[in-house]
Image (cartoon, rainbow, N blue to C red; front, side, top):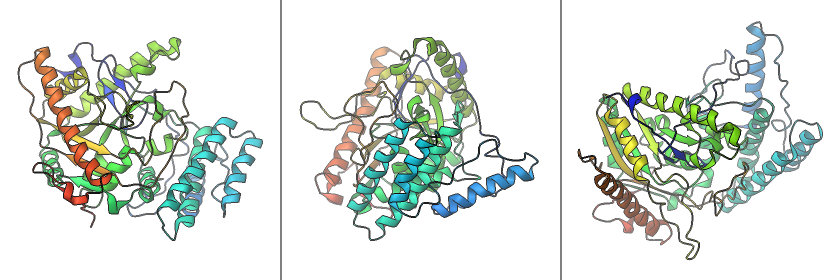
Length: 440
């Protein structure tokens, strides 16, 4: 049976990254659009090892302009300010934000978010004790602020399936280099690392793999990729995340999202925030569902999905963080997509612990533009053996299978919590969850 004939698939997604989704009432996307002129440069792709700096970004902008002119396009439609790229100090960066507001190129509310983003990022990087912290902050924030400004002036709109933009500007490496100094690798761990090699082998054989995971922060994609980039770069760079609409509409998030492979969805939680847009969102979700089905038919796809429908949040009474419960309809609909793809499929439970780095607001917010608290901290990632679905399709069986996935994620999460927050390190390993630091 074709995945496209699945009845009434719907999805709820988190307002944040990677993005959780509960396939419940609509898969989503955004209206296709690309900055053709800005991305029409003849520049070659940046290399994987290229470390972004403000100077490099300035050169890239110059190359883009040259490429457009060489192609007969004349001057760029949007003259891009070099306010942030040419900044040589914190004072110049912050005064640059004010300058762009006064010039009418930056809305005051976005400017306030950018300044707060800068200060929080600076504080987090200095927590690391890195002697090059000041240089790192200036370099990374100059590029980040420039990309945010660029998107305010010329908004990029994501297609239902967005493939990471790697050229002429490498948005993936931008995100990696921005988040990397926020992770305390000495206090970070990967559980059952050998299973990631098993997953890579299945992908090479043309199989599809789905990772059912909890979801903690907007930085989840970068955390996953950074913990695996040295040993499993194929997974780090080719993982496809199911993305809630808020991280592809918030100008402070979008530059980071542009560097990831995404299936873009409108969250059921925010479907009726603007009632007159609800019908458009439903139709967009259907387009995204079709894109997902087509991708899985080709095989060798690795998809990350958070069936909770949102980011984990602390218990309001105890303050303890735990994975949010999984939605059985989300899990079952994803299973049906896998089974109807025509390619062998596998489903693995995966746990993430990284909320300290960029914790979400204490409750779901309706408005775009949440505050972003940032910290330097250890992070954890763990995967457990795949759990095969029962052929019987009763509601009871669906619930039991969902609970099996959730139980595994919770068990792995608790081991990571003992290692990182409990300061047990590698000693927190159990018979079923072996911790390691594969970057060492």
